[in-house]
Image 1 (cartoon, rainbow, N blue to C red):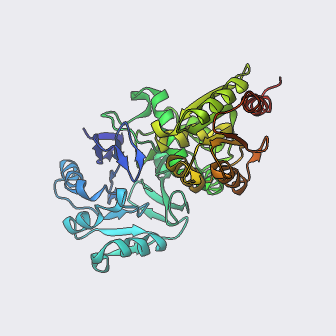
Image 2 (tube, rainbow, N blue to C red):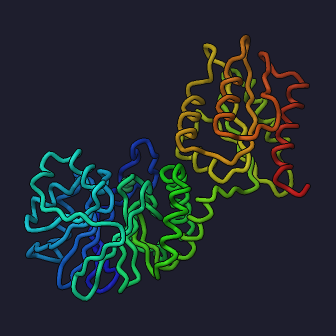
Image 3 (cartoon, rainbow, N blue to C red):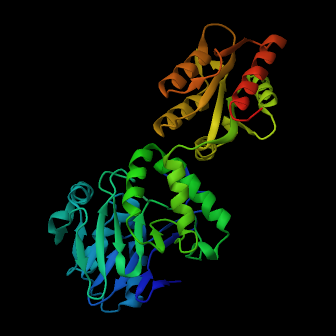
Length: 394
Ligand code: FEO
């Protein structure tokens, strides 16, 4: 169903109900690729969709504009989930001018062999394009999510097309935040930030400063629902996440071979379970990376444990270190722990990884030889207590 955001500003995107793997992001609720059509004296299409769904986008446009006369196609972001359908769309509406910034054009040219045939207008940061009664202002937002990313703002409607920023992977027949469970929209926005946007907190803070100068009633991201009731809330949450704010929460992550490391993890949980502190334990092998990153983002403290397999951390733990390291999870206190039969093994690797991320380790890494002794269990409890106590008044 097509939906109007404002008079003659309509959603024409695609709801991807069945996608569950979005370049390793576990999209348990599906996804949407949002595109919007603005019909004024001139007509503009804001973004496209993934290449396999371009036909559907063209059908949606034709339902509103049977003559298919589109003056401008705006590309806010060159990543193929939004620009993959561009080539097909421009071929179907040959009179259209592609509007994008210089970097975006460079990236689109790398992805599309026919880019040399397109009619293109390069726009600079802050440049404005009139559509007649309404106008578009282009605002560069580098690294949120790629170097070329930009917002398109419609001042006359106080409407911001924000591409990935403020998005959520959420397939729904509803288009607005107040038509779905708001907790679901917020949780999926949090998950999206943790897994896509988190490495770029500094850049997010900059674009929030830029956005503070705009009057915004509605934010239309390229994924998920459009914010019209929770606009202020999502802006405030992005500020909080960009600052790396944490909650009194201890996350205990582990993988285990013969339950020795698991016993240590449980002892850390026991020690950390103080009043006012949320504690969560996840077995890495039965959790997915998307969930782990989401849990990690606002945790004040993270304990990471692994048995040693062939002198190294367990493969699933190595994968977590690779993923969270890439997301530049920072501002944490931590403890490395685990069981090994011989050699320094996994615990040394985990401690070195925490150092690299500049985490403050509350104790020396805790290593058990085969089964943890009562002394090792007590050491784990104490590490848990220390991590929790740092975030309570107790
Ligand atoms: Fe939704 Fe960065 O693409």
